[in-house]
Amino acid sequence: MTVTSPPGQRIELFDLPLDVISLPETLDVLSHWMFATPRTGHTVVTLNPEFIVQSRTSDEFAQAMQAADLVTADGVGIVYAARELCQTQVPRAPGFDIVRGLMARHGPELRVFFLGAKPGVAEQAAQNAHRDFGIQVAGIHHGYFKTDEDQRVAELVRDSGAHLLLTAMGAGRQEVFNQYWRQVLNTPVTIGCGGVIDVLAGTADLAPAWTRKLGVEFIWRVGLDPKRWNRAPRLARFVQMVRAEKKRLKASRP
Ligand code: UDP
Image (cartoon, rainbow, N blue to C red; front, side, top):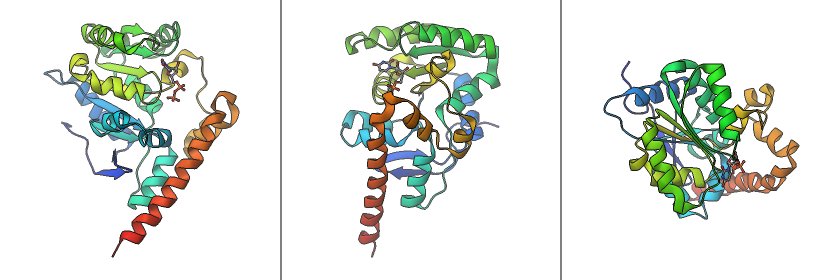
């Protein structure tokens, strides 16, 4: 099958795009992009409620997501919002499952650049991914550099010849970096993927399978990790935002 653009529908949630695409379809599209000639850069966003809340106060973040080639639903919060506001059932394609799926599917033919997390963590993630999936490590860089070093890092990625760039530098920073530098990066697939490098390295646990199955891993993340307790109000704020938007849409209908 030749897949050139995401199949299916693209809807809009709070002025941000969202592709109605399943995990297997996402893997098909990204696999095609990664190995197509000539090399063309694409950006992928795995949308979650915190991104939406943050984008309301950051035009830069909102614009980076609006310009992305593919936007998937990372979790159940987005599925809920799409159902409430667009009457659309959107399948989930979480960042971790995408990354693991691509590595499992392509193994040794896949060159991956690991960008992000604290010094040493990306090295461990790369080592584990090579051991588990046989992927080639195209390059490694931690995620704690100032924006005046962005160009140097983007050129490092470009020169690595990676098919896949994992950018895990926190919500907003990673999407803005991917979008702003996409021409320089010239990497077929660049995906902002939050804590995925930590999970691959084993420095953060993946949420238990039952929460992932139900799509409610945020309960585990927010509940069990004290560092994340400050996120609970943002999630509550998201539910409020969805309710208010639903009312507004209802009132504006003839
Ligand atoms: N991170 C980074 N540079 C930064 C901030 C965060 O590389 O300036 C890394 C952090 O070490 C972690 C990942 O980004 O590996 C996700 O961080 P966090 O959970 O704080 O961000 P979120 O995406 O949940 O906002």
